[in-house]
Length: 369
Ligand code: GN1
Ligand code: MG
Image (tube, rainbow, N blue to C red; front, side, top):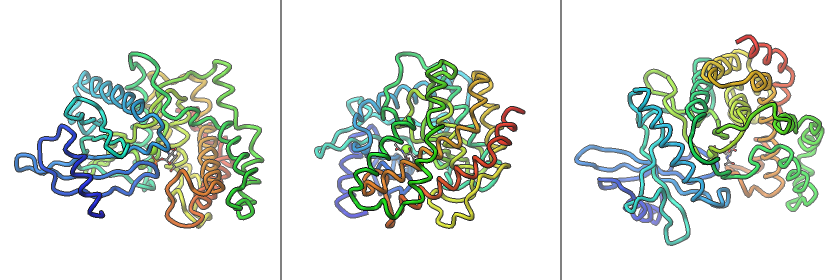
């Protein structure tokens, strides 16, 4: 980490209610959006760790709303865990560390917004799923998360990114980026563009079902990538889910769909060898089992009947978001190589195809549990 950052982080660290002295901090490379650091403190002679994170305000335009949601959600999770007598509660849900004046975030002199979480120890996350147990744990973790939040009191949560999973809007954004083609990249993505545009007939399926009142709005996570599940080092059990910035009103399908996207293929999100990308049925079955068991208390048959489709839709939606960003000059997702967003898009579209080929069998399995 460059020195100036370290000094800056020293300053940031002093704003929060941490009873200790910062020793060092390392950037955490996971995630395409926010800037995250793991900081180690000496607290009474014991080393304790915290997460300091700078919110990306290009993506989250109203960070105070993000934090208002985060406070409500984490407090509710902690309360529910306490009521159920759960142990290790600060490993089971995130804990926001307030500033000295009791606020949930700190705005520094540069207009940046920082927040701090208790670091959850002895857990790890993975970019790709290694076995069916992990897939099942992911399903259980996000299913339980939705269940615990089903009775969140108070007003509707803020929409931290409006229309986040609205595929029709995402499709329109793709069309616009394509029309503009500011970076003259469309020619290099002809096949992907053709595939994307050919899917238009079914992209509004969930929105339409919701508009007809068949599937309800719920509190959902909306970014249920497998690397947002923290698994216990020793037991392999999911301890908690992280990345709460997009917890907001949504459909359960947004969560389940992104889990299908990130847990059923053995590959990374940006795998270049497309022959390796496929929806593996044993992974899907384990994921669906974990999820359906954890959501039995509230999930309606109409919701359940669209779970396999959700995998197709959300994988497609993220695929067109990567494609749009590629065409727009990589302004949203952090990239690490030229054409990175195009590679990510290709991987998603290959997976969409693989899901479509197996979707009936996937849904049959869901119906059987
Ligand atoms: C982004 O938080 P992070 O970087 O894991 C994105 C998700 C995408 C994901 C694709 C706020 O998530 O929607 O699915 O990248 N988050 C936001 O990897 O746009
Ligand atoms: Mg995220």
